[in-house]
Amino acid sequence: MATAGGYLRNPIRQAGATCAVCTTPVAGFRYCFSCNAHRVHAGLADAVAPLTYAIGHRQSGYLMRGYKARPPIEEHRRIVAMLLLLGLSAHARCAGALLGVTVTHWTTVPSLPARPGEHPLHRLAKGTAPGREIPLIASPKVPDPRAVDPDHFIAETTLPRGSHVLVMEDTWARGGHAQSAALALRKAGADRISVLVVARWINEDFADNRRFVNDLADRDFDPLICPWTGAVCPDI
Ligand SMILES: [Zn+2]
Ligand SMILES: [Zn+2]
Image (cartoon, rainbow, N blue to C red; front, side):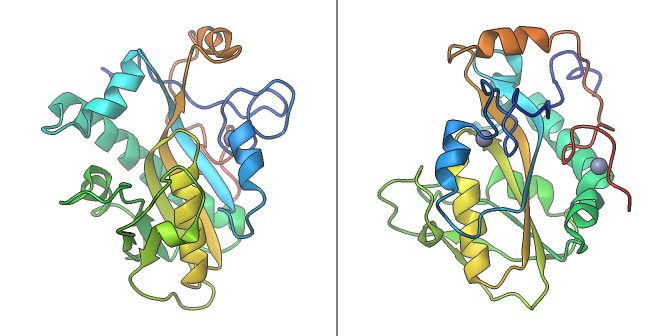
């Protein structure tokens, strides 16, 4: 992480300062505009944990674009792989501790619209993710990929009772993809759903975001800060 530690930051969890779901800056609210709008849907993810922020036009933003460029930027791919590996090895069990059931299954959110070939995050997750895979397939016709809709994805199998699915997503902008995946997994029988996000996308030009980003400047990335709590890990 030596090369990335300089520009990656741990997400901040602070009531009224950042969204309780996705950790984007908010002005005194519990949820950001998008997460609040999603709340009309029953069955959203029980917990969401970004590992870092990706800031547009900064190195962290280029990182999340470059790792899945075709062909990928190798250094970026390595850094994202390391972030995910650290996040899973140190904090996958924290999702189980938080929700009271150990993770039983994992999946990654497919691209929308569907793209041929293996998703770059799937390639990084498959050796390390806990439990069994429950593959998701992108629906062939999705008129509005940003909307939250359980029919955007189809689970390949149904899940046994008591399942806890760890969903992995590379970049969370408004969260529609990950929450649609959560709803599709509910339809497949998931009891608990945690979403581990590599990076919460931040647009510096929006509202007071530039000040928020500048205030992060002296906070070096610490992989031991729990992405589910923003502080110490929950007791296991
Ligand atoms: Zn949010
Ligand atoms: Zn943890």
